[in-house]
Amino acid sequence: MVILSLTSLCLPNDKAQTAPPSSDRVFHSKSERDLARDLPADHEAAIQIDTSRIYTLAELTNVAQSHNPETRVAWDQARERAAALGVARGALYPTIAAVALGETARQAALIGEFFHRQTLGIFEPVLHVEYLVFDIGGRTGAIDVAKANLLASDLAFNDTHRKIIFQVASAYYRLLNTRGQREAAEVSLKNAQTVEDDAQSRLANGLATKPDELEATAARAQADFDLQAALGAEDIALGNLATAMGLPPDTKIQVQPITELGLPTAMAESVDREIDRAFTQRPDLMEQLARVRAFDASIKRARSTYFPSLSFAGDGGLARAYGQQDLLPGHYAQGELWTVGIQLKWTLFDGARREHEIAQAQVDKIAAQAQMDVLRDQISNEVWTAYSNMKTALRQQQSAAALLAASEQSYEAARESYGYGVRSLLDVVSAQKALAQARSEDVFARTQLLLQVANVAFATGDLIQTQPPKVVP
Image (cartoon, rainbow, N blue to C red; front, side):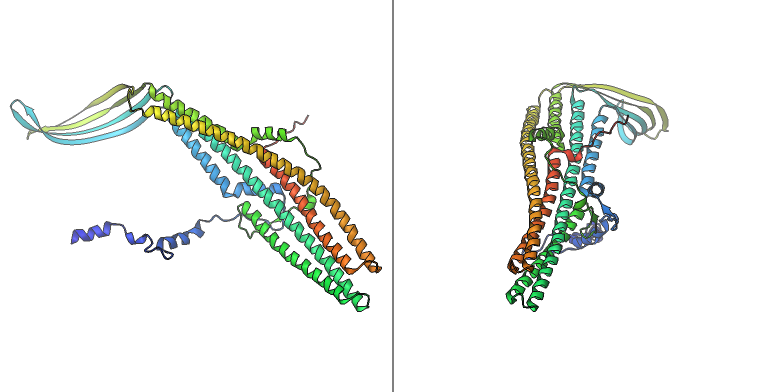
C-alpha cells in the first residue's frame, strides 16, 4: 500500500486535460480557462498614436513596418536561418571537449593457477578532439544549402514588407474614399435640406404643391440614409487601417486628406518595361530562385556521400588510479595518456539510399523551377492587370471630374430655373441626385486612381525599392 501511494503521488494528474466525453456538446476544460486567462497578459501593449497629429502615408507605413507582427515573424525566421548557417559552418572546425572519466571495478584476475580479487579505481581528466579532415563536398554542400535558405528567408522578409506596405496603402486609400463619400453625402444632405426648405417655403406661399414638398422630403431622407451608411463605412475603413498597422481597430488616427495628394496625369512607362522591372525586383521571384539554388546544393551534398571521408580523433590527459589485490595494501599511481586515430570511411553499399536521395533532390529542384515559371507567369499577369486597371482608373478620373463639373452647373441651373418657375421641383431633385452621384463617383475615381498606382508599384516591386542618394556637386 505504501508503494502504491507513493506511485500515485509521482504520477501526473491525468484529469487536468482529457478528451471531450461526448460528441454532442461543447467541452470546456480547466486548461482552456488557463489559456484564456493568460492570453490578455501575453498581448503586447499598443504603441501610442498622437490623435492630434495628421499622419502621411509614409508615416503610417513606418508604424506598420515596425509594429505589425507579420514583419517580426519574418524577421525571426530570417534570424533562424542565419543561425542554421552558423551551425553548418561550424562543421568546418574541430570539436574539442573536456571529458572526466571515473570508474571503479572489482574483478577476478587469473594469476598462475589462482584467481585473485582485484579492485581498481580510475579517474581520467582528458581533452577529446574530433575533426573531419575532408569529405569532398559534404560540408560545403550543407553550407551552400544554408546560404540559399538564408537568402530565401531574407527575400521573404522583404516580401512581407512589400505586402504590409501595400496593405497599409490600400487601407489608407479606401479610408480616403469612405471619408470622401461621407463628405459628399454631407454636402448632398445639405443640398437636399435646402431643396426641402425651398419647397416648404413655396408651398406656404402657394407656389408649389404638396407632392412637391413630399418629393423633396423623401429626397432629404434618402440623403440622410446615404450619410449614415457612409459614416459606418468610414468607421470600418478606419478600423481596417489600424489593423493593417498592427494596432487595435478602435485606434483613432488622423490621416492626410485626399485634397493634399497629387494625382498622376499620364502613364509613366510601357507595360513591357513594367513587367521586365518586376522580374528583376519582385522578392518572391528571387526567393523562389534562391530555393532552386538550395536544391542544387542539396544535390551536391547528396553526391558527396559517394566519396570517402577522412576523420581524426584523439584524447590526451592524465590518469590517476588506485589498485588493490586481495587483502594486500593498495597503491595510488598516476601518469599521462593519449590516443590518436585516423579513420578513412568509404560507404560501398547502402541499399541504393544515396541514389534515391539524389533523385529526390533532383525532383525537388525540377519542381521548384516549374514553380518559378508559374510565378513568372503570375507576375506578368499581375503587372498587366494592374497596368490596365491604372489606365482605366486614369480615364475614369478624368471623366468623373468632367461629370462633376457638368452636374454642378446642371444643379445650379435647375435651381435657378425652378426659382423662375420654368422648371419643376422634380427637375431640381433629379439634378440634386445626379450631383450627389457625381460627387461620389469623383471621390471614388480619385482614390481608385491612387490605389491602382500603388497596385502597379506593388506588382512591380517598386514599393520596397530605395532611390539612390543624389550627388550634390
